[in-house]
Image (cartoon, rainbow, N blue to C red; front, side, top):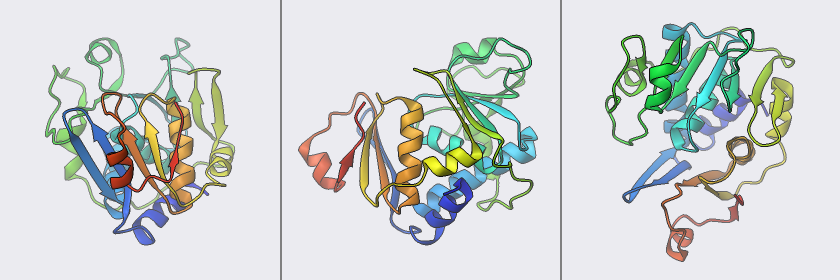
Length: 239
């Protein structure tokens, strides 16, 4: 199932039911219904297109940890036809990213080109670090964009959707990404933040495509029986 089809499922069949729940540090819990998750993705997609000139084939380096905002960014990048890059910033100028999305102050201070600063705080209204003059502040900008996304040019099935240098490395076309989203089940899947990001993305797509829900837990969060029962966990992705 393609990412646009998954998003359609989220805003229709799962509009009011939990689609993504985040357990973060300091007792942080964020729950997004299918419609709210789709709204976040739409706003981010509109920011990508309207402010960052994203179009099919644009290379986007996703320099973020496993986090609910990371999933939003991945979905938005694929909805707009970008190539998502995970891992080291390619030194080859021909393969260098057009857009870097990061929560790292070090990256903000050193990366050249178009940079988006993402504050991982749940209620952040602006980036809490030092924002370079040319950087886009995601928290400050994203809420002003529309809750719906009007699709423009779409990436062809042979376009590269994902290029990861993490672990053994992985490259998927848009056609292969859609195939990777098939075969899931309508479960409530617990995903620890210690899992590899490519595996997190793939498992989340499969779960949503089947009508299920994803629960992400930060490394600092203790997975207790109470949490498992409260969220009605029926499956677990091993780190």
